[in-house]
Amino acid sequence: MAAHVENPGKVTNVFDLDFDKQEVSVVDIGRSWKTYSVKDLSSAVYSACRKSGLGPFQYEARLENSLTGKARPSAGHLSARDISFAEEITEIDGLLDFYMETNFDVDAVFGTHVCTGENDDTLNVYANYDMVAGQVCDELEIDLHRADGREESVEYRLNAVEKATLLRKMDAYCQAQTGQTLVDYSAQRMAEGIAPPAQPTM
Image: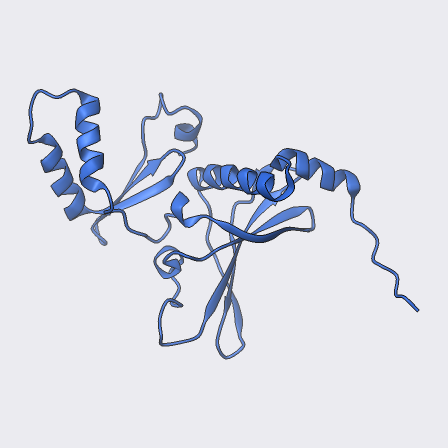
């Protein structure tokens, strides 16, 4: 996946075949993962290839048209459409924290059980950017808040494609929020250092 991101001409694509779930996932540069059922993909391939004598790009266009609206969320495959941010960018221990909105099926992606009327559990999801290393951290920070007051951490390790997609979205959000690129904003924050705590007023 890292080679695909760096040189799509050399590694043309990356696929994940899950025969237990009957799902096929494909890496889409700029949009991260797309996942389809084997049945939908098989039908789309049949539809695209019924007409003979077309060029490769025409077959590809027919295939993509047949798959429009058929993508589904899938565990371990965070797609670009799932990634959006809200609230202010905060800084903790050299990391910039981006609060992720959870307007997608988090249960399908993270393997949780919060999109249900059976409980009142909630998730807080953060993507972190390491200012010193200049890269997205390897894991999302996911806090599961149980209705009974318990808190748990949910592990989700990012792959190369997801990190590249997050980096692009972080940079765009940072520019919208601060007027600076992610790199420039990080440099400014590191140059400023940690401000001393405010003194209590008498």
